[in-house]
Length: 67
Image (tube, rainbow, N blue to C red):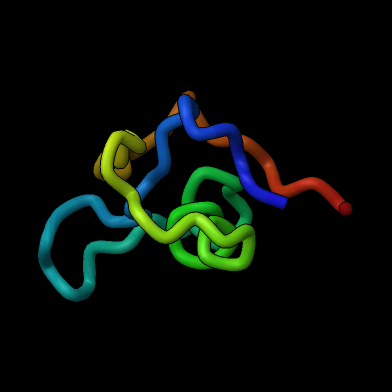
């Protein structure tokens, strides 16, 4: 299962540096939708799905559910 298409995804990165990753990315539905769950759901084209860079102390995290 993935997020609705109108919910933005998160890149899980603070910048384009290879070491600047968000430590919360593996427990965030927004990031997991971006890297794996959209593809598993058969979404092939990301055009129109907003994706943002991660921000420190993020207030938009969606915790991973146990489903």
